[in-house]
Image (cartoon, rainbow, N blue to C red; front, side, top):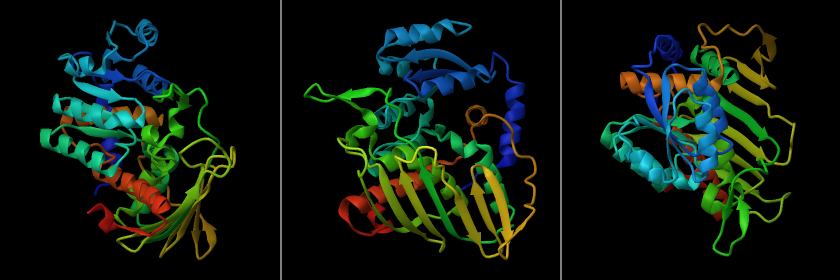
Length: 364
């Protein structure tokens, strides 16, 4: 399992600066809701991609996006038509979670490279099917977890990779945040009732799969080892009328002996969430983005990470994706790491749902 390579990202950044309109990756985007705004903003900053096709059920959204493009992109209300478009080289999927599996496999089997918003799918079985389609066709499959490329995560990862902490033995962290955006798209059930799609298991999977996956992906790249066992608890304790949880906590044992204590809360707006990593040589603490390096419990100057890529995390994610497509190399956030992070989210959900310890054998 690989972790992010600073050298790879630096090389990708240099390549992007020299990209021309002729070698720009021809992109089609499926889904133009709120999340797509960050994707579109990043693409405007990069010469490495050209938006040639759009798909959304709302024609007005597509028209509005087209007005901001240098050249008009094809517009499809049926995403399958975008996948069949021979001018589309790579597909970006920015749809609700329950659609990821079908859309990703269709695009991969059509010979397209794919940037798929997290999570890979809402079930482990479907995630493995997406993985199989990517590997069978030799396609690039990047998972859209932009925080993996963020400065705080990159600094912490570089410090761990340098060996300054020694072997990481314990990690404690929490995602303490507010509730989901109320303006999110609403799913209409057979009774005609509309509900924020993140509140439903059938459309979101779980809160851990929708929200915690960012942190779990970062931690997976740090630990670099598969989970061995997970014990979790949680439920909907503050907000009513939804299926997905607003609170959960998990203890994870990894195969290499590392331990993780993780909590998620969706009714703690502004509380943040500190991170502590304890190694056999030193410890690392991060609070509101600031890193503190401790040796024998005493703060010390942290070794300065060299050559960290600078810039917006979303832009760095796309820069890496374009470089992967051109050079036919795996993304810096490897599919193995993304799958293991997803497995952690599935394991937390399974442990809470069945009231038991979940082990690696559950995913054999």
